[in-house]
Length: 118
Image 1 (cartoon, rainbow, N blue to C red):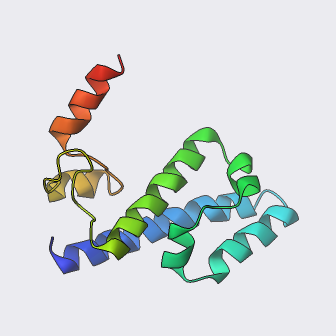
Image 2: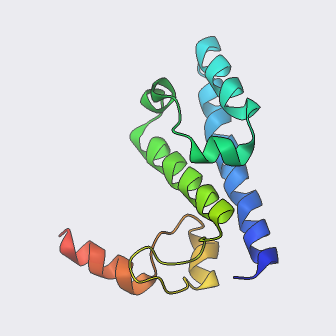
Image 3: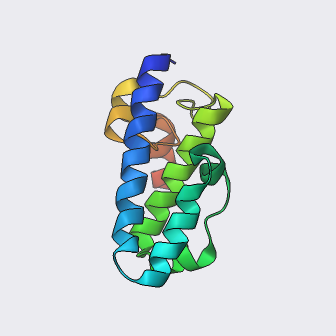
């Protein structure tokens, strides 16, 4: 995977993550403290660690799921596994990653997974 592309995606993921955390921080002083502690560590360390349960409980289910996907993608970037389908191991096309930077699977595997869960 092209390093420049991965760096661009990483910046986008971090920006999305910050938007979610800032939205949460705006809700109360206690949440501001939790967000500050999450932001205090190294971004990659924070991405690979489980986010405090209170933080996740305070998020809406969609934001919580998206935050976990973003952190997982940042972790895969750190491990050098970003852009590889978790099912078949093939490279996920860059167009898909541009549209959905935290995609876990290629289109073929994602479609098969969706059919399984119908």
